Amino acid sequence: MPLPKLPTKRANILDMDSAPKPRAPKKIQSQDAGIGSGTLKEEALAKQVEIEDVSLEKTVETKTKSPKKPSTKKSVASSKNSKNSGSSKLFVLDTNVLLHDPTCLFRFEEHDIFLPMMTLEELDHNKKGLTEVARHARQVSRTLDELCAESPDLLQGMPLNSLGNKDATGILYFQTKEMNAELNIQLPSLKADNKILSVVQSLVTQYPEREVVLVSKDINMRLKARALGLAAEDYLNDHAVEDSDLIYDGNIQLPENFWDRHSKDMESWTQAGTTFYKIRGPLVSEFLVNEFVYLEGDSPLYAQVKEVSGKYAVLATIRDYTHPKNNVWGVTARNREQNFALNLLMNPEIDFVSLLGQAGTGKTLLALASGLTQVLETKRYTEIIMTRVTVPVGEDIGFLPGTEEEKMQPWMGALEDNLEFLNTKARQDSGAQWERSLSKEIIQSHIKIKSLNFMRGRTFLNKFIIIDEAQNLTPKQMKTLVTRAGPGTKIVCLGNIAQIDTPYLTEGSSGLTYVVDRFKGWAHSGHITLQKGERSRLSDYASDAL
Image 1 (spheres, rainbow, N blue to C red):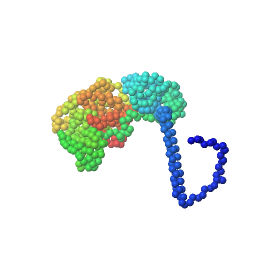
Image 2 (cartoon, rainbow, N blue to C red; image 1 turned 45 degrees about the horizontal axis):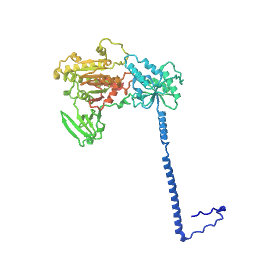
Image 3 (cartoon, rainbow, N blue to C red; image 1 turned 60 degrees about the vertical axis):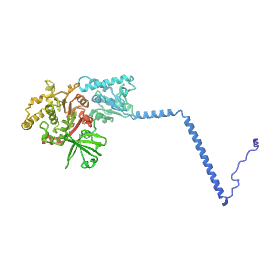
């Protein structure tokens, strides 16, 4: 088909004003008008579909031509990392934190740690000797040396996870230059604490975008830091519980409607004089193995949780040591908690018992009476070993002469007092019940007093070990003692967390609190907090009023 000829004249510009106006449509043409509007709608829809198709083609092209997307992801990740690095804190450690917990370097998770040069100087000053502090100082020094070996460039810092500690993802920094920032208050510049405060002030000035925090066990150090406007915190990672009121009591009181809510599908049976109840209900999830439960009223119940499995729990009735026929070396329980404690102390399946309570609640007496019964009567253990921390209440009286047992004798006044009471009790009841003629010397021959300093490396077989005043032990010392137990050995820890005499130990960081929290729920351990004092009315009133 031939093409049309090209135009020879230019087109005229159309003037809309001079154009003839269209006539009004007639009513007959209403159907045509509707058709026209329908065609306009169809044309608009067609144009919209074309636009969507074009936009879809463009998006497909952009998806096919996206080689730069991995770099976008990389930039997002790097910004996230930079954000995390900005939010992580910088902790400046005081020397007493390292001496208190030699593994504290790996307890700060993703945060960074800064060690001032004065901290290293004080570590070097405390490394000599055979004390616990000296051992901790040497352990920290070895850890720092291993970290330096893994990271030769100290200016870039040392990753704390380089030794296999996966939880510690921060970086350790040393002070590599002089940092003597002026403090707001003039303090003696030669004092070690003030030098560390100056380093903290320098870090705050150098890194204004980061939160710099001083960590110290020294209360006065933290007070001075806060007075200077610096952030300071206590080292709380070693606390088993945050509040002493949260310490596990070892017993729970059941509600009055306990049987109404837990008697469905209940099974009960009797074995060797003990009644067992297999129950299910809402309280089962709160039970722990070897925890005591009690219900007082018209039909009282005193039982011990023997098993917790899913929705079921097995309760077993306990022996009544308040009755004279069940006395232990002439001693009977005077209250509910003492009855629970004797059930734990006399149970051969319980290897670890912890007794908490204020002065005069009978902790030492119950432990000693049960130990003598199981050593001299039932022959379950060969002898009683008693130890305690030698921390004086007042002024230290100096070195004591004699052998190990003679040196420990002044610290064992509680043992002597309770032995005298038990001997008096035995002489009073010997004609009526026991028909014993055991002298005080025979009893004492089965009781050995050992110093805590010579426990490392030993193994005790078939021994009844009593650790008195255990609240003054650190968690590491407690671990050292408990791991001395061999086959057939029972360990009893006694203490009152309100009478802590060891510096830098609190109710939350005491070794006694530590083992109570870690051993609860184990099938071969038990704990009871004794509530009522039984020493005398004067002692009870003094404990409450003073």
